[in-house]
Length: 77
Image 1 (cartoon, rainbow, N blue to C red):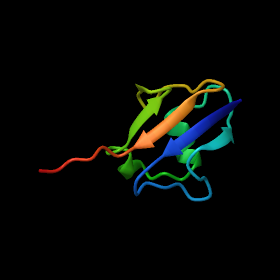
Image 2: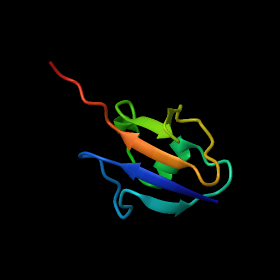
Image 3: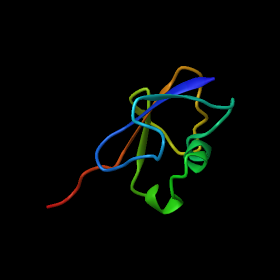
Image 4: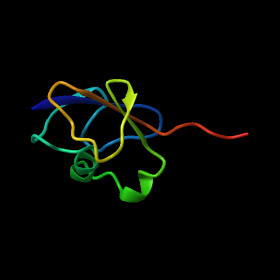
């Protein structure tokens, strides 16, 4: 099945440009996908996943045709 992955800002995934279409296995969770893409687990506590514009947990199983958007929320004072 295929999904689209997007991200912005200083976050990047080696060899996977933002707005890429990826072929993944059925029942792949966001966490599993990030493992496969080499995203370090310690970075995930700051990362927010949105699937089709809705916030999802990392254990959410992705479905064919969905769009995954990853971002680090901006904070400060």
